[in-house]
Length: 543
Ligand SMILES: NC(=O)c1ccc[n+]([C@@H]2O[C@H](COP(=O)([O-])OP(=O)(O)OC[C@H]3O[C@@H](n4cnc5c(N)ncnc54)[C@H](O)[C@@H]3O)[C@@H](O)[C@H]2O)c1
Image (cartoon, rainbow, N blue to C red; front, side, top):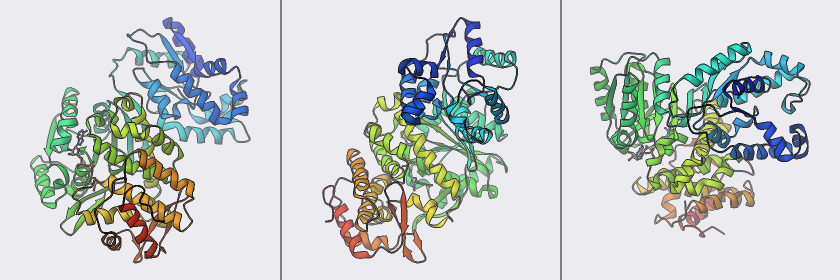
């Protein structure tokens, strides 16, 4: 794969003929199936129509060929790998190579090319190529980088070396270098990704911070993989669940690091859900005034939410997350295979946060949640095997990454990270009244999201169709459906103590037709009515 003009066809043909394999140009397959040329399809059906045909052509390729002989060399169109499902189908079980060619060289080649390229026509081809390269690099970089500027023999030599190297069985789906750290996503690749990240951080050993549940489900396997790759492993166990988020635990853990003689610059690796990542990150933020850390989130909540954003914290008796620091991990390793052992309730609750991300205005995520959310919440193996989990994790995580990059330390006012608070005004209040005893956070967020949607409809910022769509998505996930036994007045009173305030006024995030607005002028009476309706369960809407 690579940009248009990176030489995929020329290189692919030669490689295939050397091995007696078949060369498949995906664009040719699409043209054959539709009886029209790519530019004609773009003209008649737009890019969306072309992408639909492209998805069908990728699916028609079927799974990777068995055995070690090279049977097919596949050249997907430059944009085919933008779609997470296409990457899932194309990359699993195959060797994936990225023909990396500088954008200036690409622009020059395209100027001379007799083939029409719909996405790079117009007055500023170099600008367009650069924009394409920036938008797609994280997808291409999941493959092994091949220097595509070398001559044909040089490129083929690199590909032969790749074919001769042992296959690990892991699948990398995305690799991004972002202002908030390296992000890698894939299936079964946690050990490979950690090995790479530890090397880049020049680690001497792998210090793994985990807790018993995540250790049994994921940590032990990762530790033995790392030992197999030659790393000395030092496990450091924190208590399970919210018990890890105590200052006394940080003191004990820091003393254990001191006994290991952990030095400045030596990274910690956090393996676990959000209740492990928060204190492990706080430990990394404060030990020796800050050491680098790598997150390997093992719950769905952690993969799409808590591992991203650099918020580390422990609780105090006076409040949750009161003591903490911003400390972004150097790398976030998102291995969706680790989620297979999660209990259904964990998966379902996480969908509450994911619907929230979709409702903020991510149309592709919304569509994926509508299509596959219920199967993911149920933990269906088909949702894992078919790539639905990987798609939703990628889209939801990336949506959060973009919000965080735009407002790293939550100073962006009404357009920044505050957006992530959609649904949280009432969710936090419900959790406080519940005493954090019975509801999972994502479950509370579902009630809160319904409340925000209904407040938005009440004051005319959330169109009824949008409100319907959000509520229907939650209905299908059975989230925010059961009545809750809390007095509405208590919940309304608790919204007053929510920390997300602007100059003493409660700031609401409300859905619009395709995004959100923030408002701090919502009067109490309609809120009371909405809260009562939400607490009454599904069907209990305020008039
Ligand atoms: N920092 C942030 O921005 C942020 C955002 C959201 C939530 N959080 C925090 O996250 C915490 C909740 O996180 P959580 O829901 O991940 O809870 P958690 O970390 O307690 O994990 C839930 C349970 O799942 C188990 N588990 C972990 N990985 C598993 C796996 N792969 N298979 C089977 N079981 C596994 C754990 O042992 C635990 O029992 C809260 O403390 C919350 O404050 C932080």
